[in-house]
Length: 178
Length: 178
Image 1: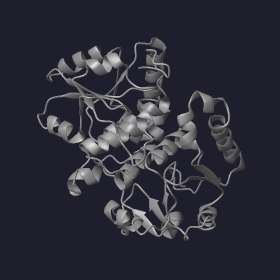
Image 2: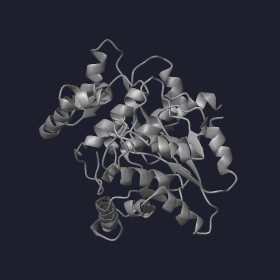
Image 3: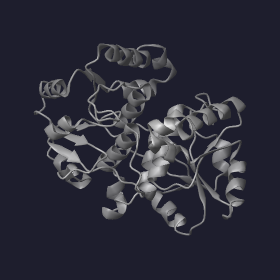
Image 4: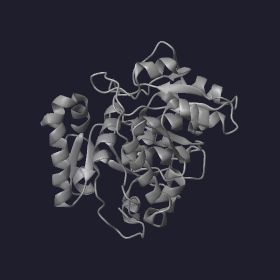
């Protein structure tokens, strides 16, 4: 990720990133929600949160959370995610990065919907903090157009952006309203 | 709101409810983000969070947050919200409640879009915890259809639901993709 000053950092995972995005992923039938961090403390924290809801007291208190958090898989790097997918019987996945900034090579949602119809696996990549680093975006196979609202303000949280993008991409609302 | 056991409660406001929903509201040109709670401690907490970002150190660290959190207005009750709107030079607002459960009198997004074209003010009402109480839903003028994804799982966070509903309702994505 990058921070406010454009330095490359490993950002902290927050509890609600995991919960909100896992619940959105479950709602839209995403296969796996990979959380990527190279930091050991972060990995421990994530595993602690997940186990509370999957096997701990949280699983009895709210079993619906369990179903969502079950989608989470923690990896050290994007490369490990690709390898994990391709070693699970899928083709080697393509990466679609997201960014709040427009890029010359942006693809739109309709194009991405078309790509998904091939049945090939895709990684839809979100960054926390001030977004994905330029290096990661350059390495991605595609970069999705930013979410635009109805104003010039484009500072959604990663949680909100993920919700809106999955709804636009996978939800059937658009089909009904064509 | 109601809790898991259907008791009527005043749920706790979380920091990220304020940030995420304010940023979504700003993105989609919402006039005011009213946060309703009758609990004094909660009101103080909300004001403390807001002032950190509006006048405190946060306003220098991240001025974009200020623009979003500026939309927040704290009130004791929904009735106070209605009065605040109507005493600000608008017509008396109608209430559109949201719920993850289907209701016989649900209206869909297209219908709500039509209603908004009248220029009348509408309050789009979200509940935290396990949702709005039955009483509140009964008193609402309309109840919006639940957000459906592509699975039977319908347990989005209020933050994700607000993001998706405002995108469907106000965003121009649907217009472009008709």
